Image (cartoon, rainbow, N blue to C red; front, side):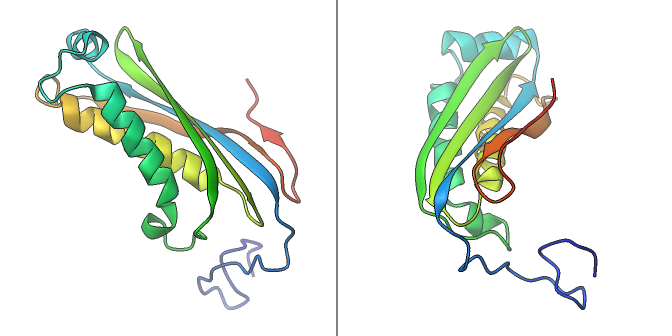
Length: 157
């Protein structure tokens, strides 16, 4: 019908059958940012937020989210995640998150990487909202993926 893999010929949603695909090493890198006041960013940077170590909690939340993506996004496959790294950096007016997720499976981990970033940034919001309720999560996006039939892909600079 549309060429979209999650729709059958009649247009109904389906989970793609990847049983015939070879298990290959696959990776994905995603990033996102939460914009906030310089005051809120300083609290995060200095470890002075009332709820505790914002970056440590956000990192663990993002890693946990990558492992549970299939429970959150209906047509995602549950995958054996081989590794997740989540880098968080405090900027003048925000926090940037970059997640790298790896597996050896028949389907990729793009959704897991973007979920890790999204949940990490939501956790930052939750932990700092007392200082700035106007924070904005922005630009969650895939930066690169490798492996699989479609090969490697990298976002143009």
